[in-house]
Amino acid sequence: MQKLPDPLPAGQPVEDAVHDARALVPNGSTANIVLDGQTYTLRITRAGKLILTK
Image (cartoon, rainbow, N blue to C red):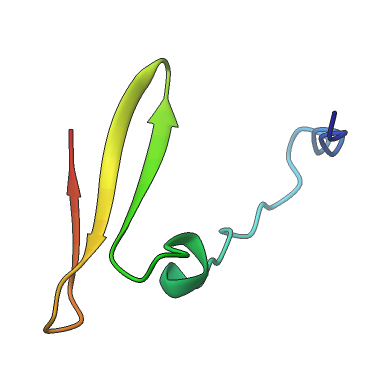
């Protein structure tokens, strides 16, 4: 099991996480993302655009 990082102290600025979309989509077209028990599909189009659907 992966250990999650400790939360930052209150008041400390938080930088936005940056992820390469192509790294999230290993098969080159779609990846499933789960948020609060709901599954979303992230898709890279042929035109290189991102589409996120429920």
